[in-house]
Image (tube, rainbow, N blue to C red; front, top):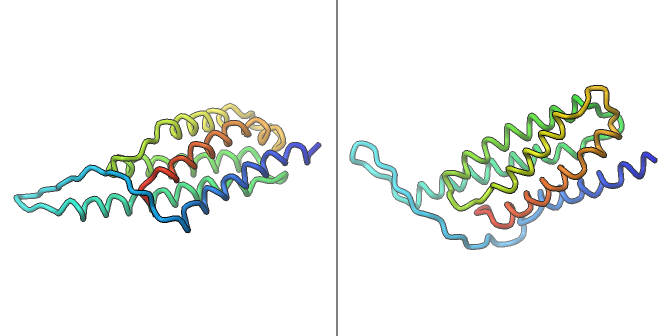
Length: 161
């Protein structure tokens, strides 16, 4: 019975691993980005420098988000609901940073991933404190799968190499 419950978690874990490793060997896809200028007291930065800095921050925040998402792989039969809630908090924090940096890049669409993460967070919040890890994992499979699916789209469509 435990094996049947953990098999879907293994599939999600493999999918998260694929997200974390995707794009490492592929050249970045060209994506149009808006140019921006920043001026301060008559001085201005070149659009290329601003765009490069914004992309670098976005890619850093995307890596942080992926690392937070990979924590799901550490769930086991010895985990607790508190462990799941800590993962949710870490994921939420890194997600907020990613959304902020995505605004400065301007070409990344995060609406669907945002909705998937909202569903995941709601599912975690609805867990009873005394729920078994098997029940927890089973109830989170669909929300985790949605996050994985939408996260892989961001990886493919995003501006990071």
